[in-house]
Amino acid sequence: MLPKQYRLKNRSAFKATYKVKNSFHKEGITLFVGIAKKDESPTKVGFVVSKKVHKRAVRRNRLKRLMRECYRLLLKENELGNTQKYLSLIFVGTEKALGKNFEEINAAIKKLVQGVQ
Image (cartoon, rainbow, N blue to C red; front, side, top):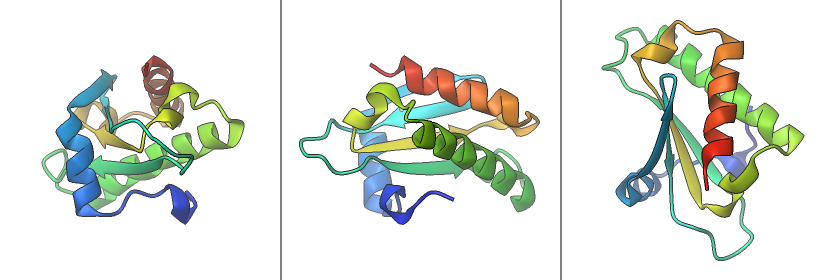
């Protein structure tokens, strides 16, 4: 589980990140990137899987757990690259990502994180 200091929670923070319209997409996962940081505060991260993706909450929550765990492992290994220059990140899961296993999700998130300038 991600420590509290890294979690993006406020609705206004989510809206502000979406408003920047800076996104990257890879294998069923979209990464929205917020504005650049001015201080040394930690980057906040949110994970979203819409009800339109699948009607069962169990399936949506599994995808969110997989994405959260992949990000946590990258954070632990310090392989986050340029994503730490931004205030907030939002990972959005789509239908393509629903049936994938941990290794495929992990590879997609690694590519997304490394692709951010």
